[in-house]
Picture 1 (cartoon, one colour):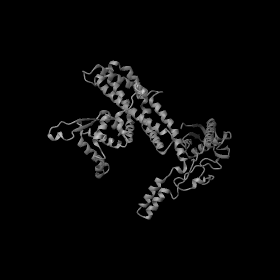
Picture 2 (picture 1 turned 90 degrees about the vertical axis):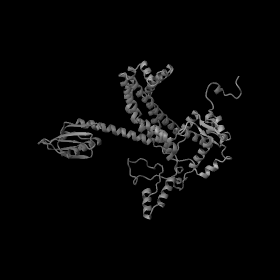
Picture 3 (picture 1 turned 60 degrees about the vertical axis):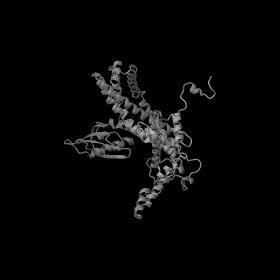
Picture 4 (picture 1 turned 120 degrees about the vertical axis):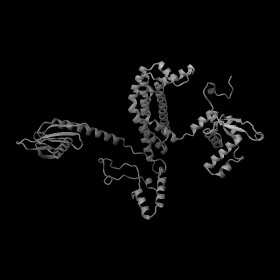
Length: 515
């Protein structure tokens, strides 16, 4: 029978409460416990024999003095405010520290407190991980920048060493492959956790900034390295499977352990090497690799980033530029003269106060790239005219829906591309004819290409035989124009906007070049 207070999950074998982490959640005393664990962890860098009670109290006092001042350290470590013995007993009960006593060598040792303390290995690992900061995560992701290149190089070294039966060198190269793969996987997990937290819940400035930084880090590190070296790594893994045997894995494992090592240890290391090869296949698979999966996750995060940024821009007065204005005011106030202050103000504001508001004009149909001076005015809501950090109250303004306009723009661009292709084919069909024999040019698109070709030919210098070779300004069209015959020296081209008189050139080759 199970006791009434027993947890069925724990009885089923699942891990439950972790006592070693209890010092992080202690009510009102967590700061004291964390300082004590900090001091004990730092002491391990200098000594492995633990820290005595008096030394621990002095180190805690020094740590507080460095963060505040000596008077505050003295006040915070008084016995009535800081019961060191009670704190250490609690840490011992939670299996955070190990306590023992020094040997008494003198009579005075029998009357003093001889307790010594040392962190348990589990507590040291936990606190070391806890003290790691975001900057160290950034170092981990930057360290993975060359991971694909290193893996590709070491894979080739491993294969060459196995081919030469130098299994010791093969084991060293393969160890670097495993270490680099671990760093790369850690960087990927950091990116995935940051993206997951940034995409959860409502967007805010911190989430969008974190997501943007993660995407940039991915493009800088992953996009260049993984895409470049994935085919090479896949080919190297295929060669490795063909030449390596179970005996080779075992021999590579033996090269890194003592000759008297247990067979179970050797087999475990060899199995770990084989598992690392399978993990590489999972990471750099051609269609279902983990690297490709991460790329898709980053790609899918771009849309929420844009949507969240637009939502923040649409919140009106709820987003304030107070901090920027205060920095500007401080810069103006610290200027050496009125002229310098005015220069600072002009450089920061452009003599105009920035107002960014969203809206749709009454006449949205207008040509592309319409000037701001000639575009129709957009009505501005009265709430947006008010001053202050919170000018908009209640429900924030919605981002204008321009989906139909974007769809119409894409359709117009598609039709324009079709007309341009038809014009290019029609012009290519005229090659080899004299200009005087050309049929009238009926489309504006073809007329524009003809005009560019004629201008390019006119700018080109004639050769010894009078032939002109030219490229248009966009480098898309190549034209070779031969001199006009004496009996027909000129030609009249019929264009949609009128007639054009020019020399009666013959163009045997007029073709579009690939961009």
